[in-house]
Image (cartoon, rainbow, N blue to C red; front, top):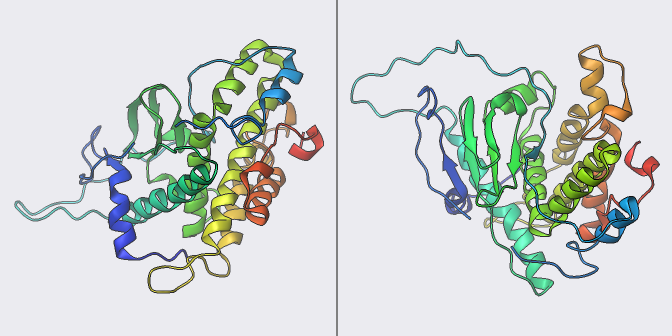
Length: 319
C-alpha cells in the first residue's frame, strides 16, 4: 500500500482539475487547477538528439503535437451506468473522493521528485496538472474519450495529464492489475511523458517519425519505454522516503503491483488477449517484458540518465 498523510494529499489538490460530470453529470465535481525549461547537453534533455540524428541523418528536431499515453485500445465504459438517486438538498457524495485525494498526493509527490532533480541540474521545473473527466474531454490535442486510456497532451498551452478514473476499474478487472501502486505507476508514466516534453524529447521523436515513417513504431516504443523507466525513477525515490509520521511510503508488494500493471498493458499481452497475432512490427508501447524491464532500470538506478532507451539496441527494447 502506498502511504501518504492528509496534509500532503490536501496540498496536492492544486494539481487536480476535476471536470468529471461535465459531459454527462453522473458524478459530483469540484477542485482546482495546477501548471519547463531544461536542456542541459548530455543530460536528460539532450541524450537522444545524437541518437535520433543517427536514425535519420537529420538535423535539429522541431515542434509537433499529439497525445502520448497508454492508448491501450480499451473497449470503453458503460454508458448505461445508473445515476444514484439524491435527496434534494443533500450533499453530493463522491464515490471516488478517496481516489481523487490519492491522485493529488501522487501528482505532488512525483513532481517534487522531478523538481528536485531539475534543481540539482541547475534548471527550473514547471509543473503539470491532472484533468479528471468522465467519458470524453476536449484537450489541446483534440477531443478524446475514455477508450484511449490515460494520456498526456503535449500541445502548446495544454501539457496536462488526462484520466477517467473508471480506467482503474478496467486496470483491476480487465487487465488483472489491481492495487494502489498499479495506479501510481500509470500516473508516474504519464508524468514521464511531461518530462519528455519539458526536455524536448517528445518533439524530437515526433519530428523523427515524420522524417522517417518507417521508424515510427520503433521510436514510439522507445519513447514509451523511457516513460516507464522515468516512472521507475520516481518509484525508487518513493521507496527511500517516509511520510510525515515516519511510515515508509511504499511497502513490500507495491513494486510487484507496478510490474504487473506494466506487463498487463504490454502490446503483446493486449494482442494476445483479443486473439490477434503477436507482431512486434505493429507495437507502439512495447512488450510486457520490456515495459517491466525498463521500469526496473529506473527503479534500481534511481537516475533518469540511465533511461536512454534510444541509445540501446533493438533487442534491449524487445524489438
